[in-house]
Amino acid sequence: MADKEQALHQFWSGFGWKAYDENTVPDNAMEQLGGHYITYSVVTAALDEPVPIHANLWMRDTSWEAITQKANAISEAIGIGGAVIPFDSGYLWICRGTPFSQRLPESDDTIRKIYLNLMVEYLSAN
Picture 1 (cartoon, helix red, strand yellow):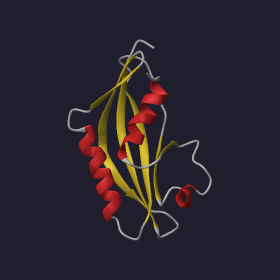
Picture 2 (cartoon, helix red, strand yellow):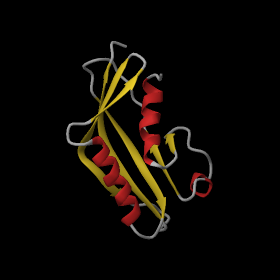
Picture 3 (spheres, rainbow, N blue to C red):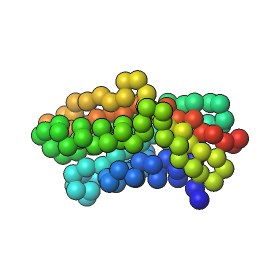
Picture 4 (cartoon, rainbow, N blue to C red):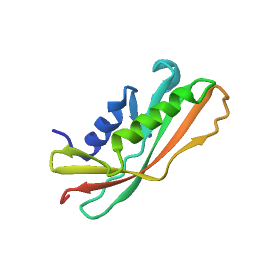
């Protein structure tokens, strides 16, 4: 199975785009990864300690259409009540934060970026 960090990675990797811990994005990721990828924060806690996390969707495009569709697909996968992802000593319960998604500007006008705001609770004793 997986630990907390691996469960987060598996969750973000489940949307058809390469996903990276925001601290380990390879150089030239946009060019290496076909023009799109996900970065995510890694924050963990124990039972009854909900924590905010975030992710960024990155895409080389002049339109917002495709990246917005990806954000909507992630929102739907999480659902209104959140998504539960198992790991070796418990479960990760991930819920949409408020606001859930936000378009952000980039200095390169061919890059589109959407920031996703989430809350996670680790249903685990450790």
